[in-house]
Picture 1 (spheres, rainbow, N blue to C red):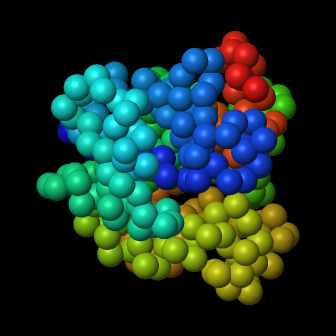
Picture 2: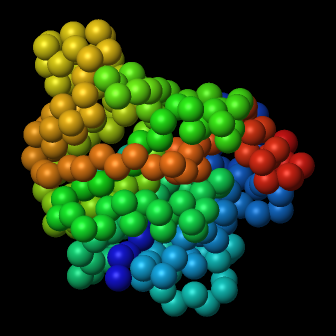
Length: 255
């Protein structure tokens, strides 16, 4: 079985605060449910998922999740993303592989998650990360505003889920902090990996294999990029226009 770790500790002190006054983004209501609820409703039916750790404001989450689901553990969040990953792993003892999801992807579906796990099967990488072609995103969600990267094979956006081996993640997190900070800034990412790589990136001649190799080297693990056909894995909510898109897709009056 694969355990899951859901990150739900982002304070609602940015652009989304104009849509909802709640303290944390995961608790923003959408059509009578919390944003986090949609992620869990997609995750729980997955046949390969075992335990679920939710890292966020524990007391507020406990007041909401009173369904007695004994495979779910609530973990008080820390100050930043990589710390929260480590906190979640501590509450999943013995986990070999962990599926990491953020709580701001309410359009995610069980089918999209299962498809991602299928794409990761049959290999022995330490980390799997999905990307989605721009045309796939715009075909389903025309108004979605995403950060895209031009590779030699095409234009892609990154997902908000990944699958990793617990042991490898605990070792690579110190190296990954800079990459996490730069995850929405393609040029900053290129500065981290070197001048030649940056020039090739600017010339739009970086291949998917080269990008995969460089990130693996920086993190000190064996990483694999998989191409998902489900844009739901990458359409997150971090600004009012994103929330409006999600409201429309879920046919709810929420903002």
